[in-house]
Length: 402
Image (cartoon, rainbow, N blue to C red; front, side):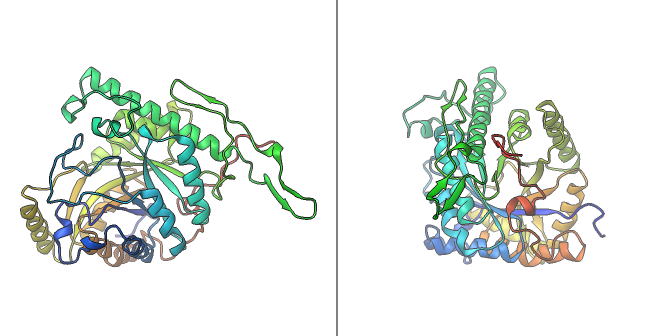
């Protein structure tokens, strides 16, 4: 079947050896190289080979854990990682087209630092930077910083009044955080740098602006010390599973990752985000909604299923997560993606179960299949990540010139 909708957007989420906790034990894995620049460069080069829109790089402020809210003490799974923003800056110059989107934890970092870091990444990548903003309710991560104490929070606490209050507070803080970051990106006008040797003028001081942001959580004067990024505003994205984080996407992001398990759920999530967008006064703005899926891809569906079962046996339990797990062939996955796109998703962020196996299966199996159906690009058609996502260069909110 050919695609009647606009072509799909595709990203991959990179995390260590892959999303299955036993992925590092596969023969194709490279566990001894997980902390090398070359490993990450290879992954992003492969993703670019498949013409993908961007990669995201996972990160956190505590060790990986099989528990979503606390450490687990396990020693049979990958523990330890490099800083995502620094990986992104290292690999950006080795690529030419693909967007690079590291994860940052808003809860314990300063928006001034992150604004400067992502602006720098946008320069290093010549306009291909983004950021995935994440919150943390983990007590052990708060203990690394000693600035705040968080109550104990387990998944089962989510629906309690105290749990909802905590989650709402963390996501409202994240919205303020993004607002500070965005204002700092705008605090230099695009032409603030004159760089005229003859007159001795390097910058036009009238085109640098204080942001004077004040809220209950942040007080930031500005301006940034890094000139406005090449994209004006690098892409801001966030993962969301429920109304409170959907509101963050609608209010503050360019792109949200969601985890529907079927087309009906995808349609309901997109409708909720669109309603929140309208409520936030952004009804006329493009906010992409990508579906997240963990993928086990093989040419034979039985081989994909057997691989998943073997990895589950190594891990000692069936792998489950927040997102739907797809096991099958690239053609079957293409069918599913097209079905889900009809429900209003504009793209997908695929999480390779075993990155050494499933990333090439995406770039060399799924992508050609989608291209045959007219559902995916055959060449990169833009030089920036905003361009790939169909987003215009944004006006500067502080601009003093027409």
